[in-house]
Image 1 (cartoon, one colour):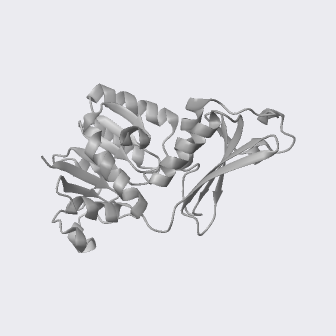
Image 2: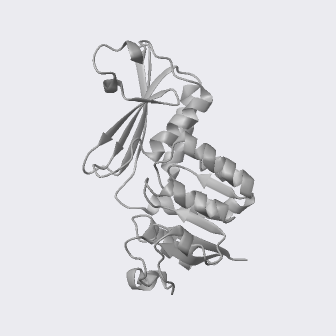
Image 3: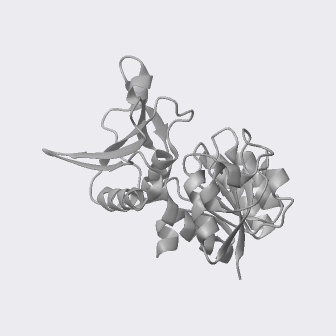
Length: 265
């Protein structure tokens, strides 16, 4: 049985190849596409390789008037929360590829998903190398006590820290909180120089041209250091297979799952 899928952000950087991949799949059926800028246009005039005859909607609520099993959100930080909650309240499962959600947002989404008996999968980053970064960093945190996170992204990225960095901070906090030799509130000089505290982790966000997404987990101990780093390239291909996996399995869950590794295993 084919899963009916709607992609929010269908004309975006990841949304375009993802929509094509869904349209080419034997077990997935692209029934909806959302793009505020392309509302009312036919998807196949923008993505002829998708070979799907459907009209692009301007909102998730509009798109979900068509029966849908799974919404995939690859929009922007200012839209993702409302999109996800709209889908959940309609009984639609959700895969979250956009960034910008806080821990409070995730708690609200989890409760809404439980109330409506649907599944939500959010990975922060669906690339396998980002999954491995999280895994290796969490393993390291079992043995080392001091670490900080550096988050790199393009100068036009609206949210900070990135979803990848937020997810890493969350996963590390599940292991333990890092030790701070000198308390942040005792810093001499502007405390902002020490970054933001997220789930007990110090996170430093850098926004410069020529970066896509890069995240470093930097560990320190007496006379030794360890850096674990994920770098995204200029293309969206690394995110496609992980997103397709999440689409296929999200219906088997109720409530929120954070982390691609949790469904890979």
